[in-house]
Image (cartoon, rainbow, N blue to C red; front, side, top):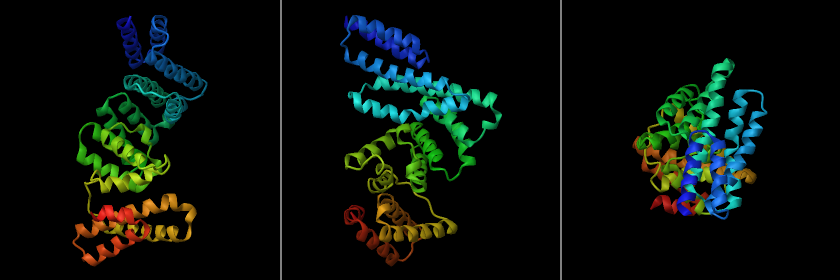
Length: 310
């Protein structure tokens, strides 16, 4: 009996990876007839039914781009659903991921062919993201690099490019890109779309410290620095240094005068202090400037100061 159920489960997952949800549902229904209480079969059917409803909703949208965008927009709610049902079967989630991203990719490719006005950086980003989700990292790199050329300061695009480089074991470059992305705008980064162990482990570490979902992206660059994950750094140009100092001045005022913004302003300020210290060290500035910046960190977060110091 167990062998029969196992065979049907694998058949369902193989069908999902081949974008055949109907065959997957048939296989899971057959497995239920053999063992209607099998926990993985029940789990897989719940996941498949959840997505079947979303696929149906996407079909009601008018444009190909909207259909693809809707499917990807449901990835985060899907994880809320998973938290409710409990348990976690990785091979099921992998098959679902392949199915969903392949379905979205189909619509985005259709948009490229039929809706010429949609050929813009956001479409390149979505296609690259879908290729990554389907496991085709080479094509993902191609599209994400094109998107990044148009959107050089877009945290979402840069983080996706970082993630796929990490998956290709281009670790050094991935660390540079992740560090840049989290500096630009932590809230723009879709952590649920990240697949590389490099960023997933760091995300999980930060969450384990008690930070909420909205706080976690803000503290990832802090602990990425403290834990040596964001260890690859670059020298700042003079214009970048000027902008960094302006940003620090603005955030210092926020921390002092706008307590309602502290959730974002405090970690962003600390991260910018880290960048400033790195710059001083790279250009061999006077140690007094480094010490002055360190003392500022101690004032706003003594615990982070001690970890950074040590």
